[in-house]
Image (cartoon, rainbow over all chains, first blue to last red; front, side, top):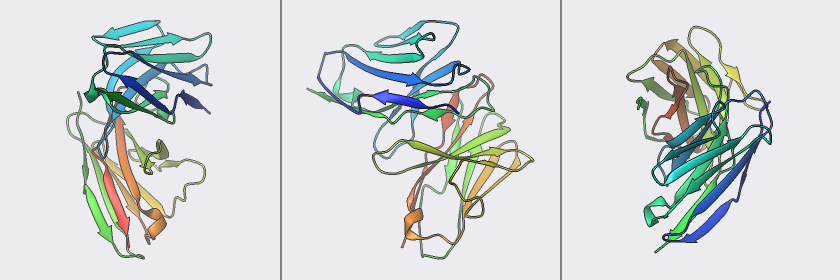
Length: 113
Length: 114
């Protein structure tokens, strides 16, 4: 089955810096890669996703890149703000509603003012 | 985005009792829902896939008789933790994927077993 690895486990940056979180996956059949942000005690919220037919997707300060050959994808956050502090999870799956999302271990991002 | 609700948000029970958690997709039909468990400062561990009208598919190591799942309609799945013990205390979150395959989570249920 699918296995997703995520690095780093913790990341501390200064406000305004960029943050990069990386994930690798094992199943070459996976073609849907979402990123979730989870604040303490709350549900994970989707922040961006990418499908295998594209290599990069951007939404304001957030971008995701995908390298299907190498089976890795990354989350890039630019101009970080203190409110970006949270735990971020990557996931991999097939792209239908019947297929389970397999999550990485999470990255705790701390943005200091 | 789509909305998934979950009830109750918190429950405290005595050891040996059973607890039922409900997960609803409010604005879309979900033939498949997913139940996760999350320990403090850890990732989301998939427990089982709930299939409408058929038996749930459990992940390895998850006791199906301990965690009963029923998916009676296209918008409702329930997880019952039977004969709960303190080690079952955790944050339980359900999820459903919409027609585009995008996954949405319920707000979670924090279970504390005394």
